[in-house]
Length: 319
Image (cartoon, rainbow, N blue to C red; front, side):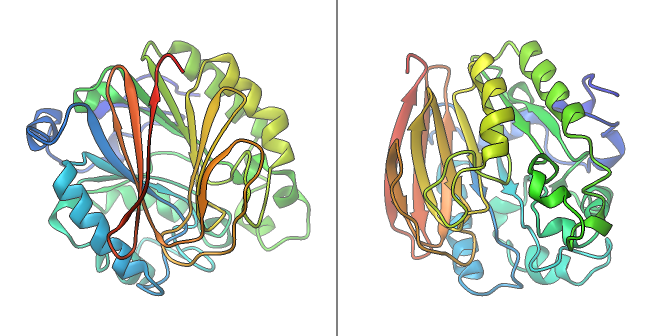
């Protein structure tokens, strides 16, 4: 297994160099943020690819506005990228109808770091990895990988993107629609070992982990017993400050077990959500999440599809 550093700050389980298009170097991103606040700004959305509807296009428009105003360096796509059965190939029309022709704002033409969701496994998940060789902004070098903040002039933060579908036991029980799409080919213990080692190697003050499925949630799917049992101890052991996910179609901020759990699965449709232990904010509304990380703080904001900022919070390193 290759866990070494590859080009452009990606640390993955396989070579990523061929997957990366020619994008502006890190100083260009840093210059773009001048005058827009300190630190590294970025967006995250999950559960979005519905050929523009419902609310996908309006959320995309707000993403473009916020990314321009805040000088966002990249976007995180947190799974269920293409409803309802993923993509079949790199030439699937879903790429144009749900991605290329929807997120057209100039400020969204930078890198999109993506992870797989359970609906993506109902198609051809390898096609989403392979599309990295056909796109100058779509970045999925492997099913799980890490991105160094130093790539964007922010050595104080490292980002770890994981593939949670194989980590949830229910997807591995045959027969399921996902069985033929290689969920069973993925070894959860290998991925957990990679994450444990990668977090241990990081010297960044901020270690932020991103996946599709929630650990704790007041949404439709609720807590994941598998992730509470197996993923949470790894995050706690390495002092991870935040875990950001999708899957539940809502906005949530939960503080629990010394970690901030943020759900942003609201890139198109939404479902009801309620409060659970540790809930600081929860609402069923289509929109996006915005982050800015400095050496001392992580700022979070939720914006809805109409442009309103619904919630803002700051997590400090001391917390």
